[in-house]
Length: 207
Image 1 (cartoon, rainbow, N blue to C red):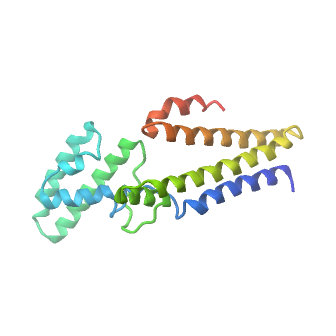
Image 2: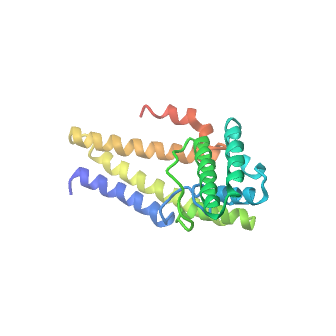
Image 3: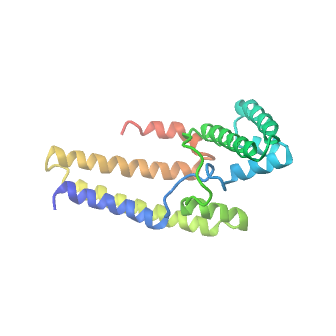
């Protein structure tokens, strides 16, 4: 097996290891029609009170949400079809602004029942049950396996680093992935929110 194929195979195992633990496919559930943002939006519309959804947006976006809410309430009274369209408009506006506040792109509302990662499901379950033990165990196992397979990948590449320029580049790619993965895990575990770790991420962008 060539150096490139050997390294690629080990890196592939890393992805598989994480996938086995955190399936189904990862995705944010704040943009689903049965996610917490839209659930609060439905409640706000039913009770004609915008307050429950304001927590999902940044202060600078509150005015736009209030305006969208007022427009939606006015249109809802025009009939069932108008109500459906107005509700959809409000849901999309709310989720779009919420995603923007996270620094994430808005790609549209996802259907109810859309699969999200096991981590998201377990995080919600932890909040419902009041116990974080199962979630912590799943995350620890994923982090452990992911770190070990990335370490194996970089060590395999290191064995051949001097064989050729191509082999050297393969080592650098594996090294960067290993270092950045370790940093992401550490920063996510030790900061209050991912966006607060921006300076730390920037520090390793040079790798």
